[in-house]
Image (cartoon, rainbow, N blue to C red; front, side, top):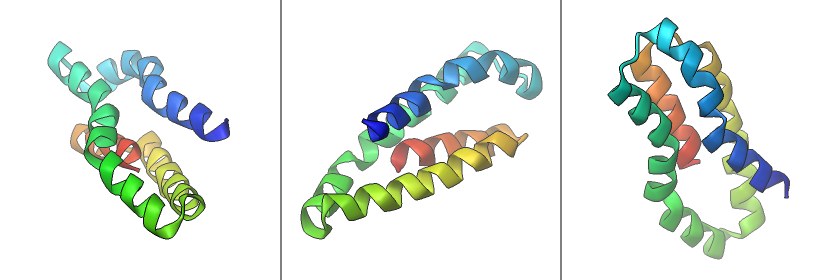
Length: 96
């Protein structure tokens, strides 16, 4: 259940960040949409690979490492002030 809470928080929590990011990063409507969708795009790109690794290596191993690195990229996304880095960190959070 904690993994599901984390995934929900990471994918839907961006809606709380967008209003502040509009002022700080000078976002347009299209860049707001791109930023919101990057986590979902990362999930779509990596789902097959993580499923395969979960079957080969074990689901516990995959969940522990991906949650660890996802947390690292989430912390990085808190401190970046560049749109490209913020976009990349949101993609990596979804990817992991």
